[in-house]
Image 1 (tube, helix red, strand yellow):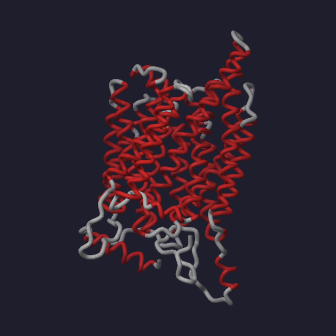
Image 2 (image 1 turned 45 degrees about the horizontal axis):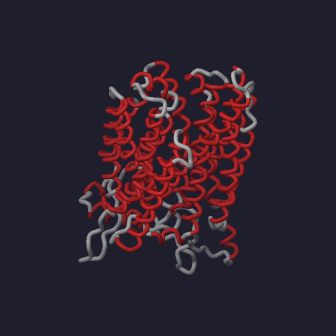
Image 3 (image 1 turned 135 degrees about the vertical axis):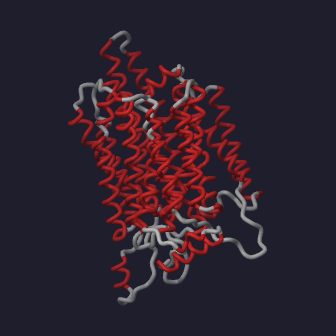
Length: 527
C-alpha cells in the first residue's frame, strides 16, 4: 500500500467515524511516541511488582499462596481479553479503544495503589489486565495503519525495543521504588504517565477502523459469547497450571479445571465455526504459514522468557543474597541489550526478511539459557549471570520485530487488530503456562535436593540453585523448539536479488512486514 493509498484509507475511516480531525497532519513520530509509551506501561506492569511482593504480602496480609494473584490476576485477565481488545479496535476505532484502555488502566492503577486489603488489590490488578488487553493491540495496530511499508520496520523496531525493555525495566524500577518509597509506587507510577497519554491521544491521535461493509449489510458486532467463552477457557487452563504449586497435577482440583478448560475451548471453537455471525477469530487466518508460525514461536518464546525474569530475580535474592534494589539494578545491562537487539533487527529485516532473524534469535536464546543453567551457589554475577543474561536479552530484542511483522504479514486492514491480539495472546498464555510448568519443575527439583540433605543449612541455597538451573535447562529446550518452529515462517526474497532475477524490472513483493494486501507478482496474497 502506498503512502497516498494508506492515507486515503485512514481518512475514509476517520470520516466514517465522524473524525473531522483527519484533515490535520500529525507527525508520525508523535503517533509512535504515544503508542510506545502506552505499550511500555502495559509490559512494565507484568514484572514491576515482582520485587515488591514481600512488602505487599506483609502490608495487606496475603497468604503465601494468595500472594501469587498480585501477578496472576493481571496476567490472566490480560491474556483472556486480548482477542476481544484487538477485535474491538478494528470495529470501533483504534483511537477510541486506545483511550478507553489507557483510561481504565490508569484508574485501576490508582485503585490498586490505595488498596487496603488483599481482595481490593487483586481486583484492581484484574481490572488493570482488562485495560491492558484493550490497550496493547491498539498500540500495534495504530503503528501498522499509520506507517507506510517502507518505514514500518523502523517503527516496529522502536515499538519492539520499548516493549522488550519494559519487561526488564520492571524489575529495575520495582526495586528502586520499593526500596526508596513504598510498594504502592509501583502502581502510582502509572498515573502521571497514563494521564499524559490520554491527553496526548485526545490531541494528536486520529481515528482509524476497519472499513464498513457493503450498503445494507448488517453492522459488524463483537462476538461477546465467543469472547466470554475463550476468556473463561484460557482462565481455567492458566489457573489450573498455576495452581499446581499447591495442587499436584493428578489432584481432583487440577484435573477438574483442565477438563473445564478443554470443554470451554471446544465450545469456543464450535461457536466461531458454526454460530457466530461475526466470529472473534476467523480460523482461516491460520491458513497463513506466516501467522501460524509466528504465533507458535511467540508461544514458546513467551514461555521461556517469562520464566527467565522470574527465576533470575529469585536466584539473585535467594541464592546470591542480593537486596531488592541491587537485584533490580542487575537487570539494567539486559534492558540495554534488548534495545540493541531490537534496533539491529529493525535494520536487518528489510534486507533479510523475518525468518533468518527468527532463527538467529531463537538459537542465540537457546545458547544463553544453556549457559545460564550452569549457575552455582557461589557464582559471581559478572562471570555467571551478566554474560548469559545479556545474550538472552539480545535474542529477545532480535525476535520482537520479525514476530510482530510475520504475525500480521498479508493480513487485511480490517483484521490487523485481530492478528496483533492473537500474537499478544500467544505470548501471555505461553508465559503463564510456561512459568507455571517451570515453577513446578524447579520446586520439585528443590524439594528432592532438600530431602536428600535434611537439616543442612548450606543445602538450602544449593537446592534452590539446582531448582532454578533445571528451569533454565527446560527454557533452553523451549527456545530450541522455537528455533525449529521458525522454519514454518516463509522465507522472504531479498528485493535486489528479486529484481535482478526479473530482468531488472521492479515488481511488488511480500516484505515480511504487516501490510494490508501485500501481494506477489501474480496478484495473490503471499501466505
